[in-house]
Image (cartoon, rainbow, N blue to C red; front, side, top):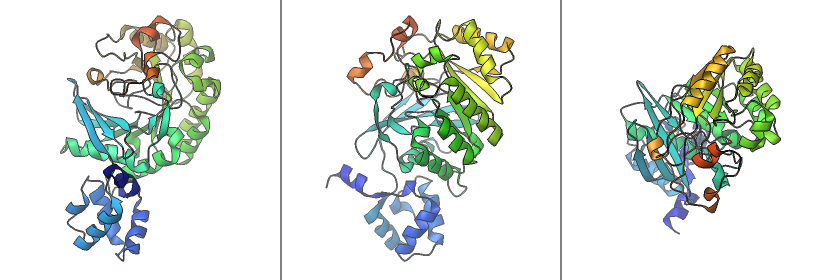
Length: 384
């Protein structure tokens, strides 16, 4: 059996809840309290052989049947603004990317939830790859743990599900990962410091609200009319704007959390006065804010058009909309919004745009959705 096959075959302890660990350890003849010790060691990024409070025989037994994580670091790239992009290889030889975004006294990790994405948004590098598979709970959690280990003693305080993939299409694994990251026995990241982005899956938005997790919701809107959004976000043909916005409105009501609407600015396409007027109508009376994101080029040498975003922000503010223009981070290493895996994966589909519509998209290539709920952003691959 090859090394990679061994990684695939072994149980990944990082994907297990404390209750599941208790059952595993009880089957090995260990008392329940060992599960809390094991959980704490795992979420510190400690290897099995270094878990010194566990008996040596137990560590030997665990090493024979399980792994404390399955990801291997493939590359790490740092930008001058402090953002760091991590490329991890999965046990089946796939590549995922994670972005560390430092900002003053807080650190945000942008995690991926899928390998590729099935939703094919017009300006997203991940969407052009197509969909391969969902990430497991362990693979999601391990991204945060690995970044935390690399940045000690600085503590990861925010996690955003805005990397590769559509988080709500991998609902169960993402929700379990959130609970594990939130656990006080592990990293203890507050639920209000975790944000989940989506291209707009109404039923899953409702399910997320019913979980009562108090996480933030970011909806990748990108247009204020169905005609324009159909071009930018293909899922809109199945779930049109009214359906998506109504689901977001219900989420805000049920959770008491403000919804963030992510809006990548495509000059002369979705930044017109008519779009601003319609967007203001859509969010009126709702606990929401609009995050405007300048279009990020797939080629980091090209200029990001920030002026268009500020002009559109002015139009929205005149209509009473709470709005913020987000700063782009990590562009030098293609870790900014919409750029993940743009350099490291070469596929024929990367040579063409899935939507041929405007010079803005044709010349700049990929962008995607959103930032974290603070003041930075990464891939934003939800739907994008």
